Image (tube, rainbow, N blue to C red; front, top):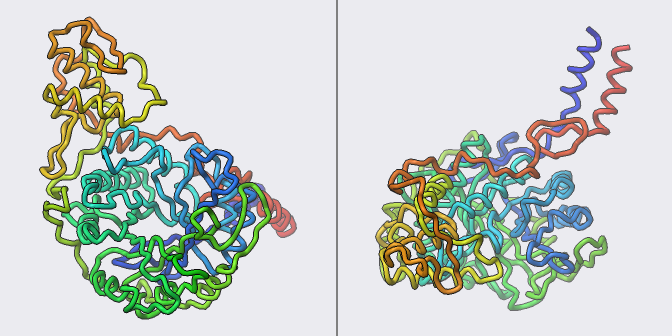
Length: 516
């Protein structure tokens, strides 16, 4: 009986609660435990100097760097870092634990240069969704994940607005995946300040009847406050505040810190946490922590090295962040009756019809389609070839035949039933149509640099049945490196409820003395 009591007591006492969960109510962030409004005192964190693998940057896989930087960020007065690039297959336990111990939350960009929606030829495909799910699973178990940014300045001018439709589809599907797996994290978007499309972007990502397709928070990358003598009025910040006064989701400056004039005094940060802005903005992220070639840093470091040199602007930002004490409201007494925006109309600077969002990718549907093809790509497309080259080949083929099932027109909410399949799958579909159009001539199963292979028969005679296949929302990412959801005394993973070996041992000794 004593053993059972000891075991139960040990388990209950040894649970070490991590950082409090941050939640959204109306247009504000709140600490779910204290009920206090939460303001993001954030810093963009993407150390690059000395990175051993520049094509796969991941500062959260550098325990030495995290141990070096976390105390400094705490000293700076920061409570959140924004990390742009991470690799889902790396282990992030040590870094996430280190930041958590220093009271620092993490806002993660989901996309990477290799796994992202291309603004020039945008698609939301099965392989992209798989990569996004892997990223979510890699971080979902940590107590200090604040949320995810689905895209950063993807549509950045009037020519690239079709990409916004696919970012919105990604928002919907990532939120659905989180919900399906009972993971509660907000998903937002970081927008640029292009004068031609900023109004449409602002409304598009927060419009429509489907709340799952609307962002949970919205970010602005704003660099108009440049001089040390600038004010709310001279910088144009006053107009931004007025424009977003009634916006119905939390608003952030996902980047700020114009470096035209140095050293920066960070007057915009003073304004951001003052009563002039705190009713509209929930804080933001200074760009950026480390000094890189772009000359925005406030410290000098190198990957994997413990040495750090504070630059002049470190103390300037520290003075602002540590001196900022925004007066928020209590979650229990806060109410907000705002509503979503009215969707933008198609026009000369906006090429997205809001009536329909691109469909959720379905691997089963794409596999079904492949089973209907007589001619397919032989092997795999060469990774060494620019994907744009393959897309150009598809476009050339489709200029000769009808390719509507793998094409789209965002301005008309028209999306082919297979346009969400991978580039290779769409190439196979195009080759097959070209092959059939040429009466199954053996020489027509292939085009340009793409070689095809012919099958004598197919297992699916009518590809219309493929539309009934389930989508990928309920499909696991197969990320074996994701944080474990069940805690253990070995602390092999650091999640929202962590059992620490040292704590377990200390409590064990205390209980022994008490019981025996």
